[in-house]
Length: 306
Image (cartoon, helix red, strand yellow):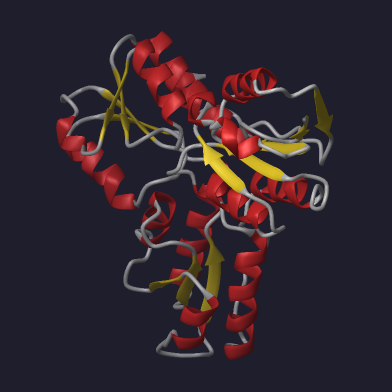
């Protein structure tokens, strides 16, 4: 059995920035540092940060007055910053700059009086944050079918934004419907789907026809990891989303000559290496890296922890 490892895979610049923000805050301010929701959608990362002294909470009311609280890479609505101030907390924003860009676009479109159609999944934390910028003007559209039905007050005053972690193909199908229905649709100055999401999806597509089974290493809460699994499955082969090596089942690989592996943008490389090691135990005889688009982007840390 041969293993083909997609590159790029794993941590993107926004995830690196978010994790480093928590680690730097712990070094600078001491234990504990509080984090609202999971800093990124990966339980391995979260558990590692808990061991270092981070405390994850769902509600700011659970954070002691005067403490430092970090907002996750997915972004938050403006009223969350207001809540932190009311609770007299020291907030640190670890939102990925590419998500912040979508927030800025939402504010800009809302200020100009547009109805905002946000392509994405309403229950995703990133979408909840963007909607919070203009809740009375934003409608979430998840599919081409919803795009066909969506009603707006003024069809000439419509703008569109996109969740950063969607499937490029999925978003394109929804966008095509919206552009047909609203010919004067206003779009962002630059693509919303993040470079890392796009690059990882293209890497999987490049191996279509070369693998008999896909393993996507990532958390089930991770939107971009789920999209990678779906893209792998679209090629007509089994595609499994696993958090780590312990979830692998030997029978999956019976009769499979080549296994493709990628990992979501919030998955540590240690999880990938553990999966590869387990596949060697299952009989993998070679492991080959398959190069894709190089990634060199780095984001500056929040000023509070520099």
